[in-house]
Image 1 (tube, rainbow over the protein chains, first blue to last red):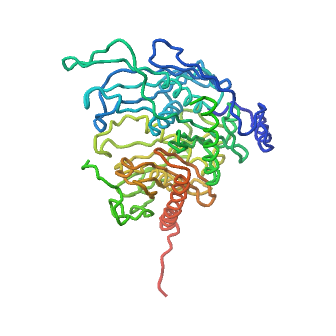
Image 2: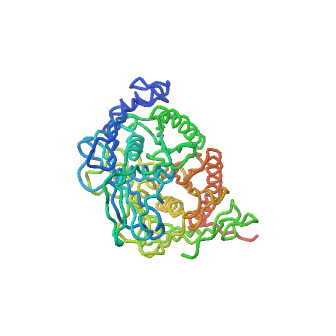
Length: 263
Length: 244
């Protein structure tokens, strides 16, 4: 996912950033415009569409019943899956999930899981036997860079919009009743991705910056400003002081985005 | 698995296996352990037993992947079905797919990829027994295997995790600490370049705790680095001390 940028363009991006400027006119610490729309898929129990600049992600949440994991018999189950649909980029191909989509899904999954977004104990129907399973499916519809942050916001927005079916237990059988209850949400993590270009960190890299970057680092920050998940990506490196700088940036940006999103 | 322990750290500040907070598990490193491979290494890190083998640089396969100006690196991290308590299906899990990617991206900055255009370098990692921290031990072994294959490198890559067990920041989590602890922060470093090539985390840490964990992990990396160098030297320098 990295070869289509020309060396000239890469150099131009690097030179701009070396002078604290970006080709699309943003400051180094600016996000692109974020638009969030919730409840766009009526068939899904929860959904959201997020535009981060021109990067577009739709997330649908389905809530079904299933068995709990043996080691957590009292807790519901969360699964996150990502589809890099071929309509989103000339670089994406059909076929089973490749390592990029697996990584994306797992980064978003860790952000939600580790910050304990969902009160999973409230998803238990019958301990050890039946629980609610929450499927979060990330659909990338247009890839213009920073799918990670866009997907994390979209997943969170969709979960906030998710309703669980009401049920009652009758003769040891779970009967779904009419009506819905809001999915119990405890945290609103925000994932902030920095790209390292020209030995500087910039937030929310768009696609050309991603193709020019040495490495990226994404951090999920919870409501209390703890770090809950981190992923470094790209075949480059960061100095230890840049790692700590990224943590500081993530904290500041999470605060700002949380205010902006009203979470 | 046995009953869950109530505490991971006792009153004396010692961990379940008796280590202090900043102590590594016992480590054993070997290079040149697979006859057919161009380079190979074996690591025992606690109860982790992991083999890494390097084939290449060799002709890129499939051919259309070949790049005109550099070699391509491939990596497969794989766990044996018998490496964990409950048998693991040998088919690659999503976790293995992700780890293969991050390990490749963590080794690549060390390799002079531009020296071998149109070729590929395969790094194969087989986890024979897992005991928490397999990705770090795999990286330590894989970079030794690359060096053993004679591939020019900027530095060795060495990895070690730190994390939080109960209320304490600890070095090198074992399986129990990994599963029951609060957070896990694997870090890979090229010590001479002071370059972090892998960083992941899951759990919950405040900023100060994160900073201490990273620093502790880096310290652990440097200690393992000394052992890495030693094992390469003992194979290649072939220097025997002779009493005068």
